[in-house]
Image 1: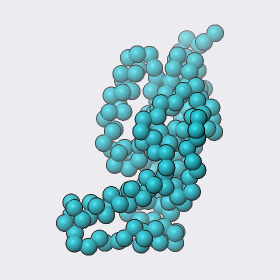
Image 2 (image 1 turned 120 degrees about the vertical axis):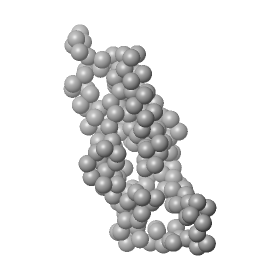
Image 3 (image 1 turned 90 degrees about the horizontal axis):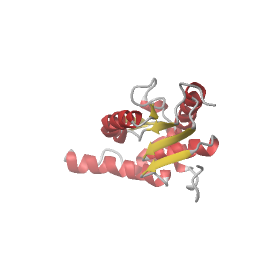
Length: 186
């Protein structure tokens, strides 16, 4: 039998990365309230180094975000005793949700536009920075090429990615991320 305060379903919300997190913040809050009205508990959190969590953006890594998601899921299991537990993730948050579910099985995954190739996603982020400099800032020459940014990261230094510190550890994790599983782990 279920405890009186148990939830039938609980979803751990895994937010996207950097500016995508900022632009979806209000939407995640709204969805959480809508789900609550339907009897689904939404657990929203910000991985260490993001949003309203401790740390700085330079502290954010894939491995720490996966660990944080797993901790939230474990807290939900202990405190809420849901009949079904899952992850909901958007963009890089969907990738984090999938990685967390691979390590800690859950009943369901809701993955919206997951980043299935983190190395390519990282390249796209750096290209976006260069485009911003050229188009939106009217630069006639980029401040740093992608090759120079990669060299900084390879040397163990962080780079500024549109106001977010992108650490060399995050770079290594994204560059070496494995392939997306053919069958999601839930």
